[in-house]
Length: 382
Image (cartoon, rainbow, N blue to C red; front, side, top):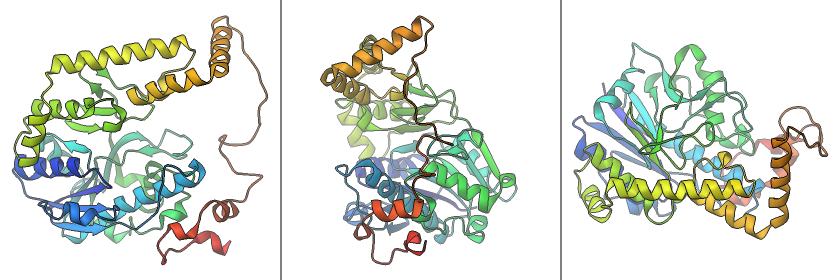
């Protein structure tokens, strides 16, 4: 059975190189590695890596300077495109079963990895993923949520049903995230009888001794599954170089030490576990206290240290917002309820209906020049 690993990346080239070292230098089996990158110079950065196939992602513009109403559908389209193309490339390489991950998500135990490949062999399910599943509903995941890291699938079956053959723009990316889009495809094309939710993402840790609190951003700032040895670290969620130090700790902990890139990385990041955990715990506890004193709920910030720092900084610029939050907190403490003006609508608060036609919304929000010339715009025909 040929096992493929489909990897999506934009510009995290160091993390991609470490991931390739994990697979090539620390695992014993031969895996087909397919990489998709949307970065314009992606191929030149990746050309020296030991991979089996590369595919250039579509040139979809994105800038953090754009208002979120315009930026969100662009980044969702770009992210979805890399997932589609990396997985399709792995199928084309001849893989029988495939795992998809982003380059900052690392499997750290080969035996556990192969147990999950076995879930989608001919004797098992056709698609296996972790996440909250089809009982969780949110704004960007209205029918369910699965993670786009560490999902496994039967290549021949997904090719047959054309699972990855769709236009991300037609999946309403102003609304759906990749997590919601995958659920849509599973329901419509795959069927729940062929799907397995192998883990609900509970029991993971942000760092040693610090449990990851759900449901907010289940893989940010980091998530380490101590049963399956699946790691994801979002470096940008940590100050200083603490994200890199955390990655280095987990590499050593799991014996992933071979390969030129890994060895260079481990020589650079050498903080002892005790010191790292102390720094992380001290910063986290301090930020929790500061946020709560100002009446800011820390839970939605998902233990993201950088986001927590930013929230405190913004609060210092807007004292009236802080006072209002404190007043609301005091009223809740007293058992009272503040009832303000409410915009009563059916469905989620971000619903466009009934005032806005969704096709018109897309026509007004998106500039077609941000997409490649051969893009089909479904909303033009509405």
